[in-house]
Image (cartoon, rainbow, N blue to C red; front, side, top):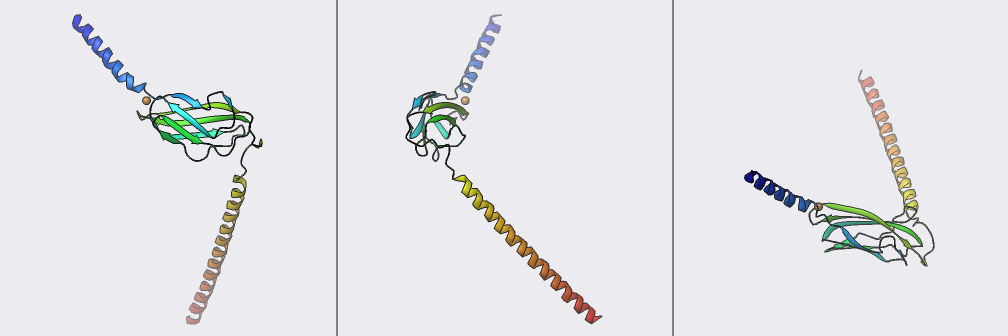
Length: 173
Ligand SMILES: [Cu+2]
């Protein structure tokens, strides 16, 4: 009976020890701008975690769904810094983040903050993607045009070749 009790205690301790590292994913301890805060247009997002993190990815989205972060996020020890593109206009922004904790587990989350008193014009998003799309469409149109010209040339060459071959075989026969 006493032996059984010792076995149970040992098993319990072993379980507790193996369970401990699994719950050691890191957590976001503070953020700047803070969650639900109303601030002046920030130049960067700074996320602080309970433990060192790596491979950070931060996306700052405005109300229209346009992304406002500039470049990649950087992680130094337990701090992640994400620069912001230009001056954010007034409005609500969502910060989506993902990091890999020191135990190898990915951790992610989102929170929102509000920009007020910004001098930036209240335009929803940079309209850069539209001209790029138009250009790439034209490019593919041009290349398919060249493809057709190439195919036509091949068809003409084949037809000419066949005619020549037919003439030759006729003159032989
Ligand atoms: Cu973990």
